[in-house]
Length: 130
Picture 1 (cartoon, rainbow, N blue to C red):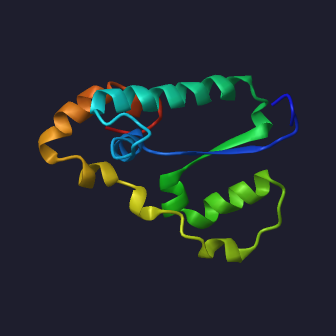
Picture 2: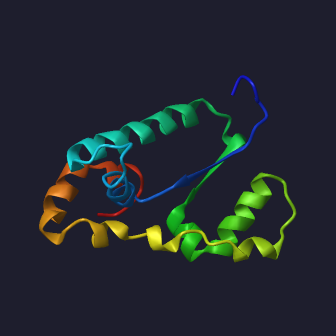
């Protein structure tokens, strides 16, 4: 922020259940659900603290789900934020739709209750229904 005070940010938000499902499979992140929840919560709280210090016009948040389901609208929003002309060619980019809802596929069903209990309000804090 100090180096580039006029910078513009786009933060892509993602369902925390999907973030955790991804992180427990990565070597660089905790593999136990409870630790992965804390890891993702720390990431989000860091963003929220930063966001609270930023001028509102310097950033936008777009959810991955909107990027997948409302691709053109989301990409137009990003182009507008960066003051770039719209180019339909951006619609050809694969935005990773297979990463939405992955927690239902990758967390064994027998662990869903424990998994959802461990999240303990993070989904609601981020605006995702349980």
